[in-house]
Image (tube, rainbow, N blue to C red; front, side, top):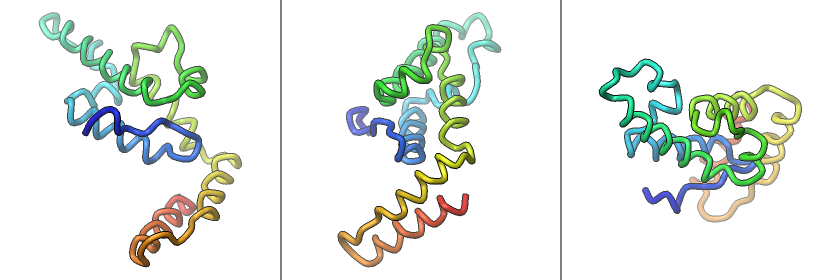
Length: 133
């Protein structure tokens, strides 16, 4: 997957964005940096290589967050800490707040039939799963 094909984060596409960013990082073998600070527990021999991977993970994520979410979640203290940014994004977008619930419901209402019945049913199923979650 080309990094140019990764989506930019919006208020409506977090699950899609998260899946694509995580998959891209997996393909580059840097996904472990999204879940924890593996540099902190590394041996002295591996620290430098892991720091490069960590910066690559942070760069991939922030490059595809867009200005609004970079400004909101990325600070001087966490800009090279992808696991902290990842947690902030998950806490924000997956919180069970009225605003998030309204966005999920609005996305469901915006669904239109465009191609085939099977694709439409899959889209509806996906949105219903989001509403239930």
